[in-house]
Image 1: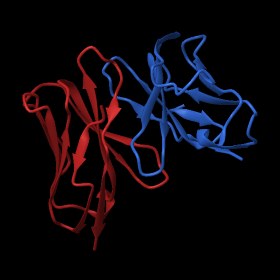
Image 2: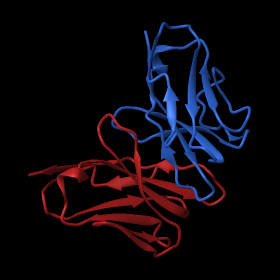
Image 3: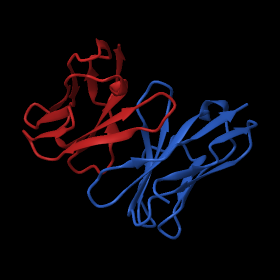
Image 4: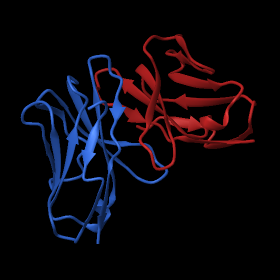
Length: 110
Length: 112
């Protein structure tokens, strides 16, 4: 079953912060985050492999709550280049395929 | 090459024709994945390979779809007797052992 992301869409002014959530109905082995700009391929941002793990990538970081089967992506001091659609991808135990979430469209305005 | 490549980038075909979509993964990547992506949606899993072995084809919509990776490198996704509902972006991704998948530019298929 597809992970559910929230919000579906968000508009920010440059410099504002955002949180994107990803929730699964199944136990998670890992969570992957991708960003996709219009007309381009999804680009890998980060992977979280352990429950409770937090990772950072420039001003983008993420957390993984294995118990709650959730992950959150944090974007701080957003830049125009952060615009795009963000997808989480989840690996479930015993299943080697990546299932992508419903997506969150992020628009950054000057 | 530096990244995953796919060809053709665009394919227009008539209903009933067969099409073959090619994926050339990052050199040395063990795993290769095929996805279909509708506009505004996330990639939808079709099938994947470890080396030349097809590990999971549960996402292939029906038996008109097939894929192969005979030498454990380049892969071909074939759609026989295409239908208009097959129109979509078909994406390929490859990964090494650590699961991170790198996507190719995709093939935009339009069935008339």
